[in-house]
Amino acid sequence: MRILVAEDEAKVAGHIRKGLQEAGYAVDVAVDGPEALWLAGNHPYDAMVCDVMMPGQDGITVVRQLRRKGINTPVIFLTARHELADRVAGLDAGGDDYLPKPFSMIELLARLRALLRRQRPDLVDRLRVADLELDLLARTARRTGIEIALTNREFALLELLMASSPKPVSKTAIIEHVWDQHFDSGTNVVNVYVNYLRAKIDPPGVVPLIQTIRGVGYALREAAP
Image 1 (tube, helix red, strand yellow):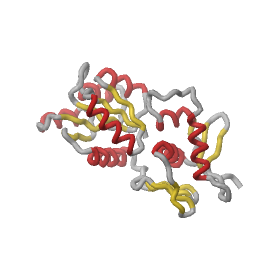
Image 2: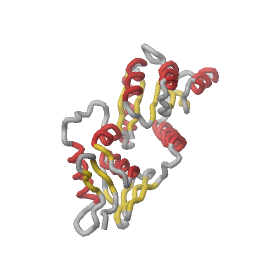
Image 3: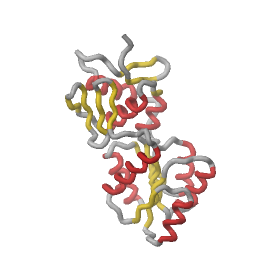
């Protein structure tokens, strides 16, 4: 999943980015209101973590403008302001949750998971395709009952493929959801990571699940008989 963090304090933004990346999210960072508005308006994000006080445009104005454009990316507001009126203003502008500073990364991650579950009722804690199971909370993968060690990037790629199964996922969609805005789309890293997954998910002796769909991308599904 891909998250936009809009935060002008470099130390705070770096802390959030690191915590989200360690949890397996792809993260883009905007340092002011106009950049946050442009990124959110031009890229498909699963959620946005937005500071209220930012240069250029404050977070509430940014989210209000996104909602007017029909962009409904779920938003968690961050702010040092604790007054009730400020929380109400953020929620009325289109925010979905509100977390006062200072906050713990554990709580932010928990709120983010809860927000994504509310926005996507179909999202479950476990994904299963054939004998492959992915536990989204424990962040573990198993096939035929045997645990498979995955890097954060491999986990994110597998989650996307399994959530889309049996439909194919294009390389463009993979890049948008698994890598951040600075990713060089001209490289063959998607192919490389798919091969990494194949070596772990489809070892010799089992029915291959990761299928190459020529001209489209990749799909994770049982092979046709």
